[in-house]
Length: 193
Image (cartoon, rainbow, N blue to C red; front, side, top):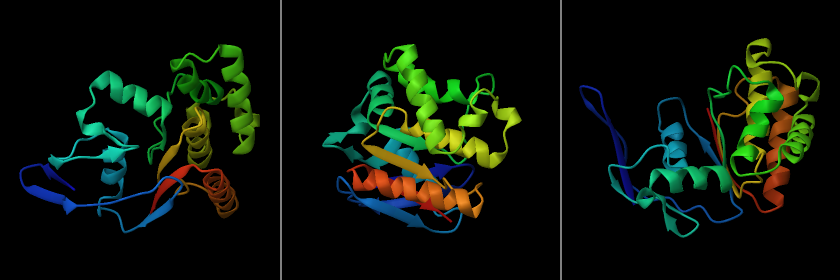
């Protein structure tokens, strides 16, 4: 159980005594309008925010008790996050943005490059591998961000409106990719409006 509020002059309670159990291999869709706490829930599970009270247990571990270094390793090795705002490095190419998570855990550059190109191919972005985020449309940046989230073969994918900037064809392709990953045992939490 956990509680989360924001304080900006007034207290806004997002979760009060919330309890959520997601089993390994689940595919959970969070459907709610903007402002209902979907992103907050994803940030809590990712360890990017802490609850005011309570705990967040992921794979048997209370991530609220982890230090910064342990949280960074948790995010690098166990989860893939697709941010609503992409969070791509503007000075890196699409290929380099996808390679970064792999390089951070020690995968050799040549191997990281090969896997990054394969992931860009899977999301239909291989032709744009050498472009910078500023040279890509919102939908293209979204697909690069999805490829990056998959870079380290995460056991859990936290996707915050991953198809919000995609046309129907690409949105269906990405949803099918998530479905395929889930069929292979990856746990997916997908937030959508």
